[in-house]
Structures are given as C-alpha cells and as structure tokens.
Image 1 (spheres, rainbow, N blue to C red):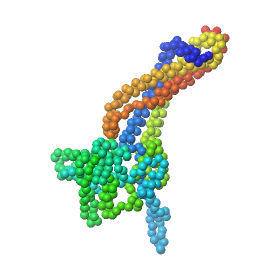
Image 2: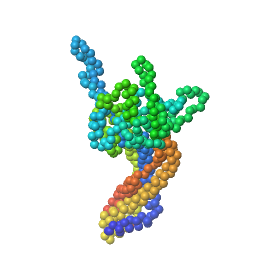
Image 3: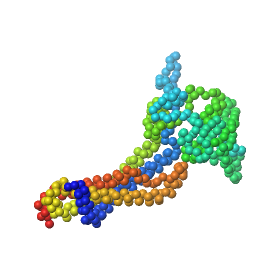
Image 4: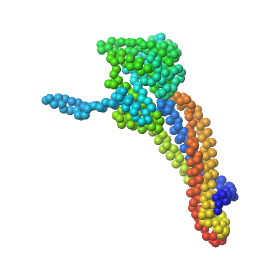
Length: 443
C-alpha cells in the first residue's frame, strides 16, 4: 500500500466518526494545553528572574578579591625555642600588577579593571546641603564598559569629574534642619561644580579636612544596584585622596587594589572563568552563578509542571485506546474483507496506528492553540503586577507571566502524536492478528 493511499484511508476513516473522534480528541486537547501552559508559566517566571538579575549588573563581570590565609595562631619562646602555632607560613594573594597580568593571560578574559574605594569619610557639599555617597573608582576612561547605564550626562571619567547614582543625587540633607521645617529640595548638580570634602584624623584626634572641586558629568540610572547610592570617580583622583589620608604614597605592587573587575568575553564562560581564578588562589564571585542556580531551579519546576500536565494526557491516552478498541469491534468484518483481498498484517496495523496517531495530532494542535490563547489571557491579567515589579527593580520594561518557547509547540505536537500512537498499539495489534475467515463471519 502506497503512503498517500494509506494517509487518505486514515483521514477517511477518521471522518466517518467525527463525533467520537472529536470527543476523544478533547481529552488530548486538555492534556496538551495543560503541558504547554504550565511549562510556559515556569519559563515566564525564569525569564523574569533572569531579567531582574541582568538589571542589577553586567553578567559578564567577575568580581575578584584578594585572599588572605592566616599563618601561626600563636607563638611563644620557651628556653630559647619557638613553640605553638600551626607551623604554616601565611599566604596572601593580593591584587597587584602581577595579579592583573596573571588574570589577563587567562583564556576568555576580555579586560581586567582595577577598582578601589575611598578609605576615609567624604561628603559632597552644595550650599548648606550635604550628601554622603559611597565613593569608589574604576580604572577605565568610560564606565559604559562595565554595563553601568546612564539616566543623563556622560559616562566618561576624567580627572576632577564624577558620576553619581540617581538615588544618591536625591539624598541631600541640611545639617541645620529642625523638625517642622520644610524638607530641603535636592539641587540640580548635573554638569555643575560641587565641593567634595575629605576628612581624616591625626594621632592626637584632631580633625583635618581637605576640600576638592568635582564636576558631576553624569547620573547613573537607578537599577536597584550598587551604583544607585554611589559616586564613581577617576582612579588617579581616588589614589591621591587615599594617599592624603594615609600620609604616604601607595605602592600598588605591595598593597594591591581592593578589587578587580574581570570582564569575560562571553557569558557562557563566566562560571568556568570564575572557577579558574579561584583555583589561582583569589576569591571570585559573579552574578552568573546566581543566574545559573535560578535556571536550574526553574528547569526542575518546568519538569514538574510538565509532569503534572502529562497526567491529563495519560487519561486522554486511555480514551484513545478505548475508542480504537470500539472501532475494531465495529469494523471486524471490514478488517476481514481487507485481509481477504490481500491486505497484510502490516497494512492493517498501519491503518489503525495512523488513526490513533491522527487523533493525537488533532488533539495536540487544538491543545497548542488553546494554550496560546490562555497564555495571552494570563499575560494581560498579570501585566499590571509585573509592571509594578519591573519599576521596583529598575527594569526598562515589564516581562511576561508566560513565555512559550519556539520548541514547546513542536514538542507538544510530537508528544501528543506519540501518545496517540502508543495508545493505539494494542488495538492495532489485535486488528492485525485477526483471522480473515473468523472476521468475515463476525456478527
């Protein structure tokens, strides 16, 4: 029997009992829609969680910190001999120029950026108002390299300039403010010169201050991250301020930097690269580790949700098996006639398996269409809540409660067809093994 003849016969037989086929396919529709919708819901949750992490920081950045291991816990001299202690020398891995060269030589590293913070108190002052932002510096001419988004202004850092977070730019206070007085309004400091006052203390407790002039050239976009309440300055400026506070020059080869920001060439290599840096003796962490952990969790949730939906398909499979069994009883004489005129067991079996698979395919198509429609309804109902969440996390736009991946409808159609095929296996075997003489005599 030719393939197209077989296909034509299958669709003809399905069309002969439209009502029964439709009722049987409804179970497959419900089961397929359950699988697709539940998996789409888990995928939507996963994408929203990943978007929130991506909004906090650049996923290609690895934060590297120095590692200090203590040596002997305690040592004492007894009769001229040293006793006690662990006997192991201390091993310190500082982030000096040698460390930068070592990490830069690793495969997959795009750039290594030193970072340091202000070691002494500092405050911005505009008129009577003061602002205590967290101050740190990165050794890059342009902060856009680190994925820091701007709300306004320029991302380029030069000597005597600074970029401040939107939240910090609003957080001004008047030290002379008294209860009952109106709250002071935040000044507009973008592209303006402000005073930055540094404070240190001498050994006798005397307070010493130093005032420098800074030009605020940009505002970091509020992202619920570290830059919201921070001010980023030029590395040379920060080094000079820390040297003023310490009263001596800083030797980076001996003291190193506070932190290195390692930018990976590809997000897929971030976790592996972080492990390699850790094996070199440094401390490394990245947001990508948390993202991968979340992805693994939601993958498990997708499997669980899909399994719950598959229970409905199992019930539908029983319905398909029952429908095909009834069809065999009604068409016993027809089966006997087909075999009498030359149809083989394989031909008969192919017809009934094709009908069962056809029911699964029809139900799968209906299920995918139903799931898509329900997913749009869920997205509309959840749009307001997701928009609120996105605003709180500083995201550019709200995500979707459900997400139907391109592979999911294809998988659902194949799965429902296979379920139908397996459901019709026993009835098809039963029909194929009928004895033609007995089938023709069946009443």
